[in-house]
Length: 326
View (cartoon, rainbow, N blue to C red):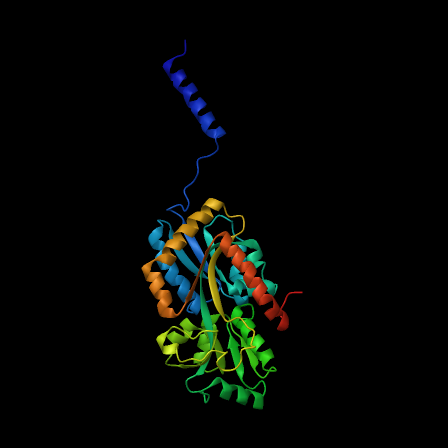
């Protein structure tokens, strides 16, 4: 006859065996004791950084895990993107992706969106061409006339050749027969610092960046088919209104959230739920409206398909600008 202790031991082994056969217990995602890092592939203080910090603040209201922002700038967003691609595909590192991811990938600076999977799409932020308040130009036509009179004398700054602003400045320069001296900087914050220090003549910025520095910037043209919804920018004419409707360049900065390909589906679903709740919150919706951001929501596979559309949009632009990775 088996003793009581032996019976209990046998029962434990049987239960443990059944549990092992069924596989290890699922671990909650996100683990409340873990940290999720949002990699923003630009320096702190730029338009993209400010938008994602606002979103991350709101995302923290919908998860017990802490979400933080880590700025890893360089190579037009490629450095931060490559950092994400080098880390485990577990959902604890997410990327502030967007138009910059597509342009950097097409230029061969990163495998980018080819090794990423979408969480949610967020919004578009139209670009604005601006000069310093102390500059002599009040219209884009005046600026262009001076540039044509003295080709390459005027510096046209962007936030990095790998990003959408870099493509825009190169594309505009080609369109206007290379009259500008295109000058890349290390992210939006670096561009703004040099622009405000008057080390560059012209800059291309997001609406949020222009709105933030209206006292020191004169916006000359919005590179978008529609005028800004921000009250102080509503008088800025579109490129079409100014007669440049054949100008083919990225008309804004698209922003989204992605993770490394291979991240478990349930982890992506959980991240999409958290991010969607933050996106749909009154706080973030009001923020987007105040900043003139145009909502462009998509989720998971929908975002992957949208990135394919962006590739089709940007490919001929980069090809014309001779920026494709051949």
